Length: 128
Image (tube, rainbow, N blue to C red; front, side, top):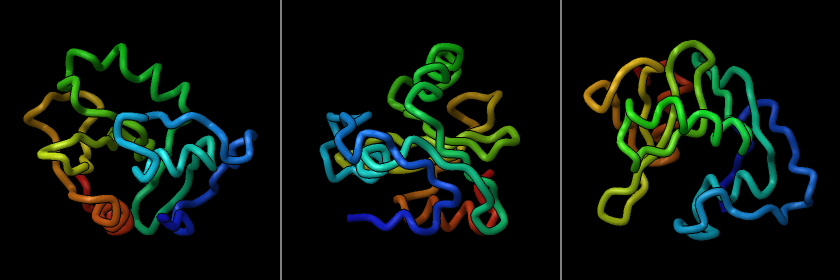
């Protein structure tokens, strides 16, 4: 189980932890599936960086206009509120988190690593 204590201003999910997983193909232990079972989103300062974890609806809305900018295997779920979005992809069975500018393409991404690496990069403001 992951601790989400460091994520600011979490909004509790109204279904008492019974929400369907956003990414069921990654299993119930996937950190973001765990998050969305308990929270509908979050937003606030995390150290030097701002971290806005989108709602399920915001994730869906983001996909369409950005479908051509980034490869289909990139799944975006959050932003810094100022021009950078955060996402993940699966490589060789491992989930890796990334940052990418709102306007850009595959060559503009930065691979940050696993979930703790993402949180550390945001805390340090070192993700672009």
